[in-house]
Length: 247
Ligand SMILES: C[S@@+](CC[C@H](N)C(=O)[O-])C[C@H]1O[C@@H](n2cnc3c(N)ncnc32)[C@H](O)[C@@H]1O
Image (cartoon, helix red, strand yellow):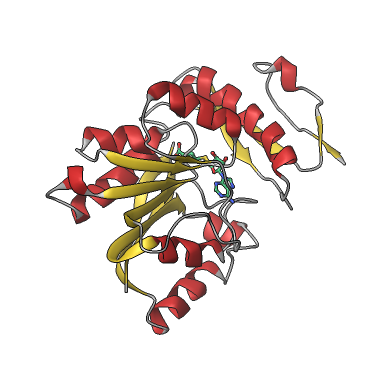
């Protein structure tokens, strides 16, 4: 059991909370701006929702109180919504979308601003779901983790499965992609947006995630539309946007 490592006095209730995982929260000095928080968290071996809830409530604190996750610093949700909207220039109001690892609903806010209306959420943290519910963003909420277990969602349900920030240390394993493909209609899209460095820094993804995506293409499960690096995904860190159509 390791202690929660936190380098801030902004969140006193979380100081020295023992957790079975490690969270690193590094201080970061913005360019000429006041002191800011740079959340960089690592959850090794996360598996149980009970543990997960404790970690999620730590993050919740930041999502509700920390201005540094505002657009301009955390641009992932806008980047994800732009990628989906570019693929669907018309009839967005008819498309059925699921936001995977929905958090408090930043991606849905951006999708709605671009005309998408039918959005479901999959998110394992009850407290994050409660916050998203207050915003009235989603039609159906699935309080689940995405991993290699089958979700309680019909095959070929969605025009789009989008995940922004869902791929990170201790988050969605590579195998979860198969479920994304299963619940997406043939001709629909899967859009994954994540920090680029996680492709190397996260053991689960290093030399595995991209090769797994390629192997799924080679077996005819999906086809790559695009894969590109974007600047300033999170503060000044680049992200990567994967877009695939399901076969
Ligand atoms: C960095 S947040 C991103 C939230 C939201 N998509 C956004 O961009 O604001 C990561 C989210 O992934 C969720 N998560 C972690 N592991 C997951 C898993 N295996 N399946 C689904 N969601 C997961 C967490 O609860 C958290 O809400």
